[in-house]
Length: 110
Image 1 (spheres, rainbow, N blue to C red):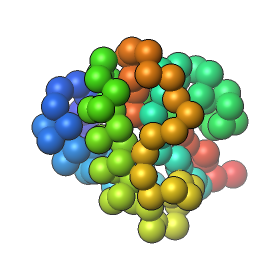
Image 2 (image 1 turned 135 degrees about the vertical axis):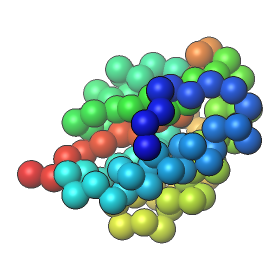
Image 3 (image 1 turned 120 degrees about the vertical axis):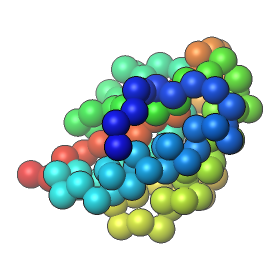
Image 4 (image 1 turned 135 degrees about the horizontal axis):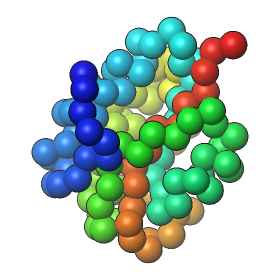
């Protein structure tokens, strides 16, 4: 699926597209592990995770919209083997300053 990231708009407009995009990551043999999250500083978050790559999936100025999208995609993928999220919800520990990004951090197979 080819989409231009990060997506913007209302959560209900983007969740299905993000689900399809993350399914492709989940099926990619080159990806060992991924983590879904929210941040207002993608570069710092990638560094904190020590991820090989961080993909900005969704961008908004609304904290509520970012949390809604983050929670929806975490709920979909929390049980998948490659998904490294432990909590089945979003939120916590992120500045509310805009812009807000929902992201997927990636670690590649060696």
